[in-house]
Amino acid sequence: MNRIKTGDTVEVISGDGRGLRGEVKRVIPGKDRVVVAGVNIIKKHQRPMRAGRQQVQPGIIEYEGPIHSSNVMLVCPSCNEPTRVGFEHHGGRKVRVCKKCDETISS
Figure 1 (cartoon, helix red, strand yellow):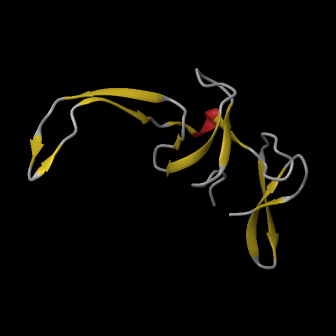
Figure 2: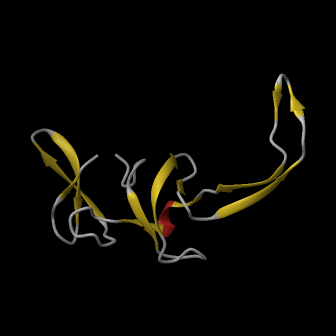
């Protein structure tokens, strides 16, 4: 079970975006990376090209790049603070638990 999942709110704890909060758009478990909305914005200069039958939009395209999962910390929905994540078994299910307030974190 992953500590950070798609849709979680996280806070960046190191790097250029330190202190920024955003929602996780995508998790890349093979590379231990996450894509967070509004963090690590990358500009790509796109040439006008015709790939197959679709026209590629030309210009400068901005999108979020992936950052390492060790550089983000999950924000607990109940105490609204960045926290470490623990795991407990409740009713035969493994659930994520906030280490600060001991509340379960919904999936």
